[in-house]
Amino acid sequence: MEWWQLYGLEPEISKLIIETEKAVKKEHDAIDTISLFNQAKVLSAFREEKISEDCFFSNEGYGYNDLGREKLEALFTLIFKGEDALVRPHLVSGTHTLFTCLRGLLRPGERLLVVTGQPYDTLWRAIGGRQPAREGRQSEPVANGDGNLADLGVSFSCLDIMEKEGETGNNADEKLKRLLGRPTSTVLIQRSRGYNPFRRSLTIDDIAGMIDKIRSYRPDVAIFVDNCYGEFVEKEEPLEAGADLLAGSLIKNPGGGLAPTGGYIVGKKEYVRRVSNALTAPGLAKKLGAFVSGKRLYFQGLFMAPHLTGEALKGAVTLAGVLEKAGYDVNPRPGDKRGDIVQMIRLKKKEELQNFCRAVQQFSPINSHFVPVEGETPGYRDPIFMAAGTFVQGATSEFTADAPLRRPYTLYLQGGLSYQHVILVIASILKAILP
Image 1 (cartoon, helix red, strand yellow):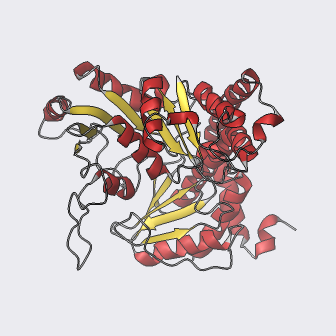
Image 2 (image 1 turned 180 degrees about the horizontal axis):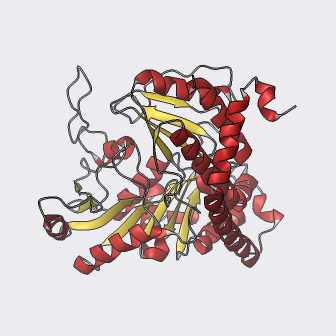
C-alpha cells in the first residue's frame, strides 16, 4: 500500500507531487546546503559554550545567577553574531518582543522610521498607527490611551524604500533623507511581508543594501530588524548585514518546534541593556527572570532550528510548485530566492480561503477533527481565518495557514516540523481544490 492510499487520495495527486519534487530538486539541494552550514554554526556555538545538563535545571524566584539562562543567551549571541542577547519566556509573542525593543530604544520626542511600509496589524497598533475602518465602523484614533508609542510621545513615519520608483524619479531617496533627519533615532526594517500581498520578504542582500543607504544619510541612527520567520533561511543574519539589533519569536524558526513560548533579542550591548530595562525595570535589566521549567526545550529547539527551517523551506518550495501547476498565483515562485519561510497564495474568493484552511486543519496532528472558522484575534482589525493544529498553540514553526478576511483574499502558509508532514498537507489541499 502507498501513503496516498491510506487517506483515500487519488493517484493523480501523488503523481503531481512527485513530478513537482523532481522539478524543484535544485532548490531543495540548495536549501540542504544552507541547513548544513547553519547546523554547523549552531553546533559550534554549543561546543564553545560547553553546554551541559546543568543548563536545564529550573530556577525560581528572582532568577539570580541562572546558569542555563545565561548560557542560552550566550548561544544566541554567538549564533546571531551580536555583542549580547536577551532570551526569555516572559516575551509572550513576536509583537511583544518588538514593542519591548522599541520602548527600550526610543524616548519621548524621538521618531521611529519604518522603511518597509506599514507594519503588520498587531505592531502597527502598538506603535499607535491609525487602523483603517472596517465596514460599518470608524477608523481608530492614532493615540487612544493604550500606552502605545504615540501615547508615550514617540512619533513615527513609514515609507517603503524597496518600492519601485515611478514618475516621481528620485523623490523616494529625497523623502528617506528628509525622514532620517532628527528627531528620528531608530529605523525599523520588517524582514517578512506580514499580511501585505504586495511586497516580498527581504533577503540578507536586500537588508544590507537598505542599511548602506540609511547609513549614508545617518550613520548614527539605530537600525533594528524584525527577524520573524527569517532565522536560518540564509547563511547570514541581519547583524552581519550591518543592523544594530534584531528580534523574533521563539515559536517561530529559532525555537525549533520545541520552545513553548518566548522571544529573543540580539545586538549591540548598549541596546540590549536598554531593552532589558524596558522588559524588567531600570537598573534590574538582565539580572532577573527565572526559567521555572522546560529550559531543555529551548536548548534542544535552538539546536533543531536549522533542520526545521530547512524542512519548512523545502515544503514551501514544493507547495509553491504544486499550486502553480494547479493554476494558482503564488509568491514566492518555486525558483525565487527566499527571505523567510512564508508562502503566499492569491485566491479569488472567501470560499477558496476556507477550503484551503480546512484542508490544512484536517491533516494537522492536533485538532484535526475541528473545523476552522473566522474569528476575532487580539491586535488585528479584521477577522482572521486560521488553521493551526499545532502542539504549541499558534506556533508557526509548525505547519499553519492563516489569512485576514479582506480583499484581495490572500492566504499565508508557513512552517512544518517535517517535510513529510508538509507533503501530506499538500495532498489534502489538492484533494480539496482539484476537480
